[in-house]
Length: 423
View: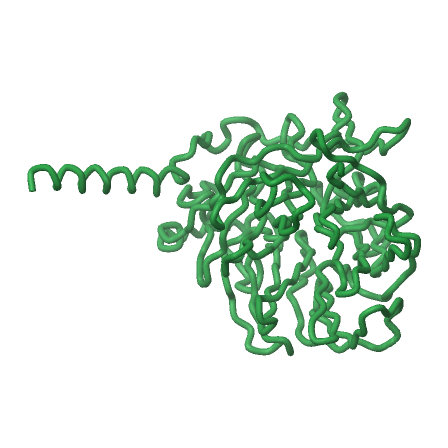
């Protein structure tokens, strides 16, 4: 017993350190640096400049001439649907520094409110057919096809349309399955959707109405969360909450674990608060607005909830403060080198609340046995121009094509890039 007890004690201590290490990650104190409004200037891609991938990959232009391509989805027959939508719903200017700054970055274009379709009929890896597939939507984002039905997530509703593989235009009227929260203040308007392995449930990512929910005094339980419903939009429940702005969602390969890329809060300084990639636990609470990155209480909250702070879950992977991490895709194909298989790609739209720009790239997080096995590393770069806050573009969505190549949307330039491994 004299030998066994110290071993058990040492094992317990090591387990405790490992379990607590994310919580004790080195985060600066709130307001350690001044909160800064620092919007990038988009200059586009000229003179042959394109995004850069690691050695062994080639980057090409997949499609252009779109209008704010945000999100892409591959249909059962290999077509690519593109949700074209924007922060600005119409030509009426919205008030607020954050909204106006984002609008400037997106050239003040109103939302196209449509879905286009791209088809590669020659098999050369690039579409030769492009046309409008579905119009008259309201800031569409997430798309999902199952059981010969197309589901579309508008900012204010989940819609369903009859669908047949191969069709090039939606002529049928959709039905509204359920309303989604979209108040007058609707800062985080995107609504992503995915289904589970047996296509029995739909998961809907709904961002917070603003930065802090009136400093904790007014929190809509149907926002800053992931909702779960059945295929008809019934049986709604909150799958997970306290997620300020979850956007990308995906299931880790070989597991039943849902993962999400989440935008955290602003105006606490340059390095607060880190956006993150996290496994999402059924019934889990992740802090917003009362705390961040676990149990770090936000000092601005006027109606604190220490009971919720105590139960806030620590995210799995920090993705850097103000990176606006959006798109998420696990690599399940074999075309890329072995190191990328099973790992996660995350598109970072880029900062506005940091003295030095952050994000504006696609990063890769390696996974092993369904869990992160290393720190995020740069994968697709070259979006920043290197001077005067100029950027060439802003990546949003990441989608893996059937041939194993990757699509990355660049919404401010109306382009989609393709990244393929060199054969």
